Length: 152
Image 1 (tube, one colour):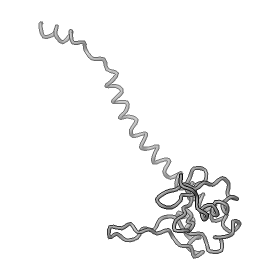
Image 2 (spheres, rainbow, N blue to C red):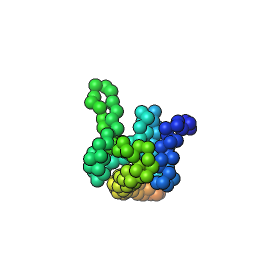
Image 3 (cartoon, one colour):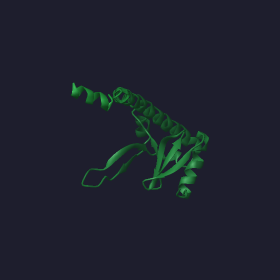
């Protein structure tokens, strides 16, 4: 596993009041996780927190900026659902905590939306599996029986 740089370590220290938080290397940056859910990312020396339709207005009103990356191939830049916290919260764990909590809540809502979709996909696959199982369970006629029918 890549070694945490000083900014990642510092960010994890700022987020300690949130509870157990981990960072995992990904795509040249770091994913920030709480309870197994990614609620933030660190890229280009900046922390970005997960937003959704519920939390985005607060981030916008506070003057925060979205994480944007260049997709290349002549396509326009892509803005993701991760935004910087307000500038005054960047160095203060008490000021950062409410923004981090919003990000965790947004990650939880996103996970809850995905969970029913996965359940539906499994439900659709289940009948197909039963058909295969019923075909496999059907006994085959012995070869002798087929030969006897031909003689008659």
